[in-house]
Amino acid sequence: MAEIIEGGCRCGRVRYRVAAETLPNVYACHCLDCQKQTGGAFAINALIEADRVHVLAGEPEGISMPTESGKPHIIYRCPDCKIALWSIYGGRQQVRFIRVSTLDQPHAIKPDVHIFTRSKVPWVQLPADTRAFDVYYDTKKEWPSESLARRQAASAKG
Ligand SMILES: [Zn+2]
Ligand SMILES: [Zn+2]
Image (cartoon, rainbow, N blue to C red; front, side):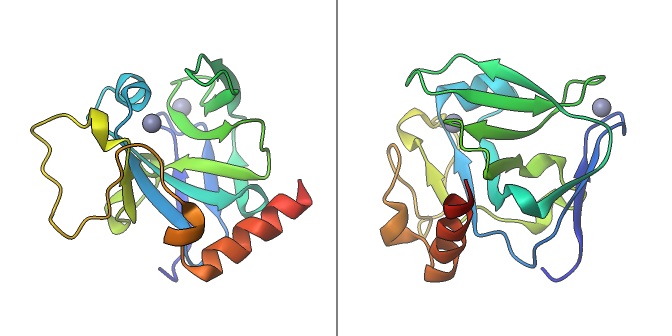
């Protein structure tokens, strides 16, 4: 994935660029919140350091979502078409969870893991070699060391 990664909302007001050769972690979340928020069977998110996301046009607006855990979840949306572009969880401004479906080449990216499969819709069949977890998972065990190093560096800044 050496090409420039860009994305945007549906109406075109918000455009963004991700300055990264690789995305350290991409996951599909099958939790009920993601199903409700996307209107689909799961959401695909890519974690990326916030300082690698450059907004090229428009100003995404942050909307606070209710969560089961009580920890803050802010979804950043286009002010016009309201498409969700990325999320910030738990107030951790240094990491963004980009909605892969808003990238210009969304099919170029495949999830590394599937989480919250306890609420996966029954007709979605994951391939046998898929790394899937009932709820969440131990990132220290599952992430490649390069991704962990990048996340640590990002956390140190926040
Ligand atoms: Zn828009
Ligand atoms: Zn979810």
